[in-house]
Length: 476
Image 1 (tube, rainbow, N blue to C red):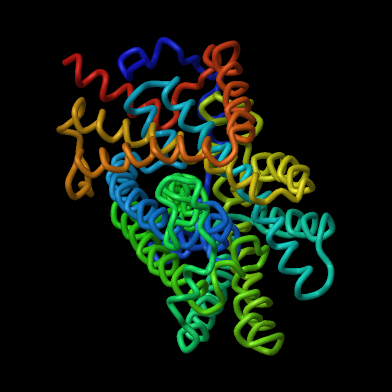
Image 2: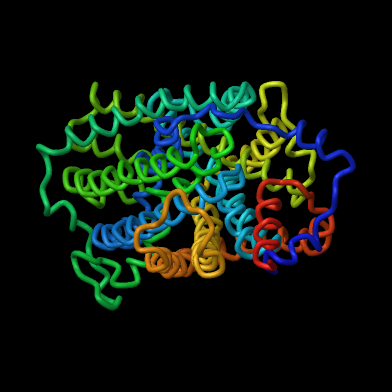
């Protein structure tokens, strides 16, 4: 379905003015520096836990190659999304871009894939917060998960500006913890520690660099993605951003460069000082690396305590992301429209609360590594669709005003597209059962659209209006 027949699937609201008045976000609440902080906050929990499971899958060498792969993919992705986000700065983010390119069904496929990513990721992060609290205070499990959801959903209900300013402070503290950790690892770096996992010689290409062989690189990709997962969510703040044409590209690229530097330095220095074998199954790898090198003491306790800020920052910010994605899909009629109602603080309260309840239930499984795979499934599917949208829009609408243009154009988005397809397959290699569970969730969303929501889409949303204008221009 393309943008020309967009209107054939859209229904009018009885009172569109009142409908949208009940679904407004707070304009101009976020500057570019807060957007950089938001992008880093989405992801920084990946520096503290989760990434190290990639060493178990592919050894240090396999994980290193996978991180380079992921960094290139995300760099190209962010450059492409910077262009699209300035073309249509709405709270829908990637969903809006795909809808511009492929119509309502394409938008829905992208939006629900993103929603799977953002709804599942906080549940995985909650399990890591529990592990860090268990290490530091001796208390973890369901109580910690519940406190996280209640406290941080409550802050988000106070409004975007307040929530993101608090998030920025928490993220800054987490960045300090990462820097302290890296500086502490430098004097103890020994390259031999990177290769202390015995190779499985039965596997093709197995060596001290690739102990699980070539296949280990692919299997490590989903965990390398965890170093960057959700940075693409910066455009979800578009309707609340100051000067979106300037601030969105700065926010995306600034966050991406910081995250790439951290990912490579953490992978090299942590394993180089403590040993890859020490980290591969750890629930708190930075803390365990410090304990291995320095023993239990002030430094390990500091990074453990302050490291909680990194996990909390991502948990906190992804609540923002899933609420804005649900807000956009609900406002457009893809999901029940009650989910996009906003409170007096212009916060979409049901879009904050309901996924939080679901996430809390999922966190009780304590399967952080498996929850990562489900989140990565949704993310990589959405990347494929968004990069296809970038290519389609460059070809079908070359004359549309683009305040920011992707360096390299279609070539850049094509690189991201190919690598995203590889990443989708990589998730299947790690655990086919979990991959099919994620696929099953996605299919349920698709059936809902085909049976119900495609007949109840709402006119007047920013992305629908944009599509209508461009369709009329093409006909003229």
